[in-house]
Length: 591
Ligand code: GLC
Ligand code: CA
Image: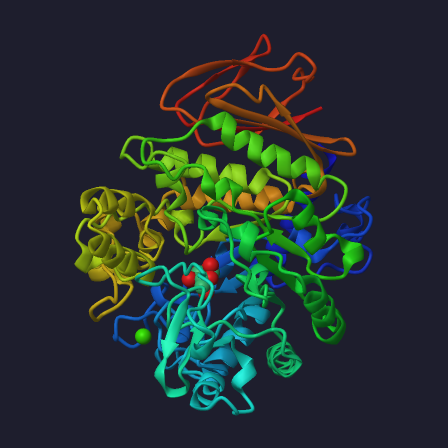
């Protein structure tokens, strides 16, 4: 109770300052002293932060070319601030021919033409910092674009000083050892290049040649480039596909079917840790920034080896085990989801730190995948999922648009898709004569384009995203699901999101507290207790379309419980039981 009170006092002071333009007079006790966080030792800003991911291409177009841009983001800074988040992560904004929407960089020190200029970037960074929001940029360092000057030089001759910036296999050695490519039309990661009669390696598309991290000159160029951005004042780096940078350069043959377990073969290569330590020593360790790895190897031990404090490598990582659940349009088993979250939480209870997320630009919308996006449940289940993310241990990474309850667009014509992953896989299926219908049905549900449709600002044409022709179709539900409408509705998904964000920000238990799960095998309900000192927060989530009468564990003293948040008006614990409505989420303070 104490902290809630002091939080209220603190926010009242903050509100009165802004409302009346007054600064508290001397003699008024310093409210900060009463902060619920004073008892927490070793506070770390990136553990307390909530990260909001912006997909710049789809956020807001400022000049009518149908493509979101930096000035568009600048025009929405007040909206971003109103969410209560602390950090913005931008998907890549560097020069790129956009084979993979910016994940193919042709110049790491410049801004993509469609997105704007360096001046725009500087204004964006300033505008965020003025609002006390930090900025994380996406470092794509496993590969560059084939249009990067390094690659142009590298492919020009076998004796180019840039030759070893990439991985080459000369044709006289015969066919290269097979390597699987995620995006290639034929899944072949070796592309023959006539100019020097050699093959180059590309784990992703053929326009994304893999950089050769064995080469210290390349590494130093990358560290210099990182310093360039850090010296501009950015606050963090997301390390894209970084677990793949260290390759087995003996090019051993892998067993048949290895591509089904690709992280085991491609991830956590022999020199990965030495590169990360070198990077920490020469760059990231010198700045107060957060670093987060996409991918965490294939075991808990791998993940720890990347993020444990004493290793001095990275601050946190995100694993994909949660993402791997829920890819079947028919649904998933709640206990599986609970077990994955719980396994990772237990392993990181005392050491290391993780990110928590249910969606990003590489997966479907969270409400379509883990909730229920039918009209009856879209809003409530969106709220429930936001509750889950904001009440777990780990730094929340929240994808733009989810705060509105945006849902999958479900393209059924190949012409509507924009993602290279889908387009090339389609060609692959065609070439192999596989079942095209089955493929299209799957893509409809899991395609990355589902999260990449334009942000829905209002009910005007193109959802207020652009005055031109959007680069990808707008979800037709924008008249109902949009920021303007939701800002006016106190019961909207957006309004709820702001509340659950504020709750997390005020609660040491939700950020640092222990996590204890109850009834892990319960098929509909996810129930857990977060505790820190005297503060105990009980979260109960009904992951089903039905009412559930849920008996609360007798060990939890609910006698003085206080409901602090729910996505329905009513919730009551009676005789240690609670009647949960469909997709109801409840958060109690337990005393
Ligand atoms: C990461 C990105 C993804 C991109 C890939 C290649 O997985 O998140 O969007 O396609 O790396 O850079
Ligand atoms: Ca634009």
